[in-house]
Image 1 (tube, rainbow, N blue to C red):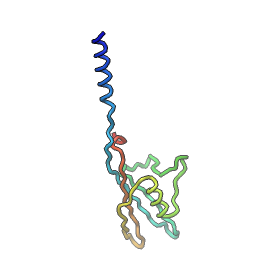
Image 2: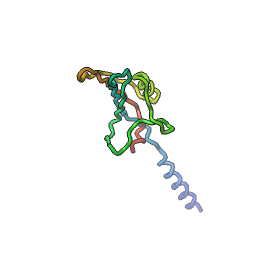
Image 3: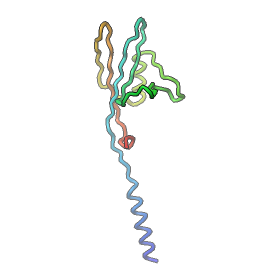
Image 4: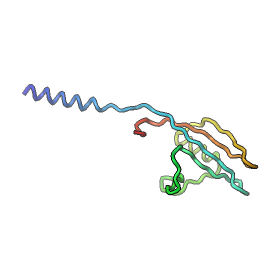
Length: 116
């Protein structure tokens, strides 16, 4: 009987040792590209998370109820990213022809477990 108790104790202790979780975090980066539309005061927003682009896959940003997420201004996009936990790093314009395309860089701490 003593051997059975020791065996049960040893097995339960070994299961408890596997209960550790990895709480380390890694930094992820993204970039927002704001391009002005022709003859309008609005901008086209592209959010680059670094994944591979595909013509067959719909990569447009959607809300929780699967509707297309539209932004009114650049500030609307910046507020959206801030609410989602992204931290602003840098902004810079690139002049092409007669238009300026604005780039905004963001970073976010994400648990390493989400990538395994």
